[in-house]
Image (cartoon, rainbow, N blue to C red; front, side, top):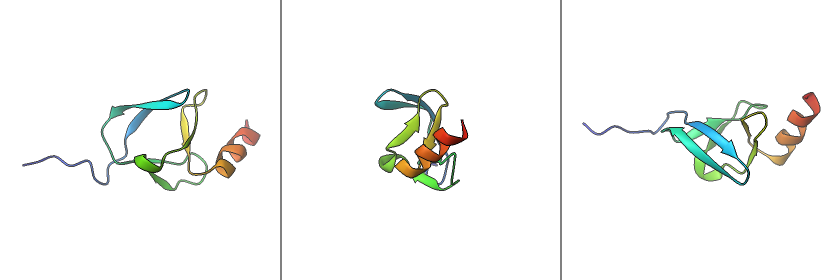
Length: 66
């Protein structure tokens, strides 16, 4: 039986300008909106907080909450 990562949340290590998968999956969850973000659409994250964001607006909101 083939294992599939479809529908699984990936564990990710966020770095400056890139990220590394720690465990397989097809998406992450926005730390602000709780929306699923497909890995191929992931563009915004915080290296310091190690959290992903669905949009630039969500990233700014996260900065504001400290």
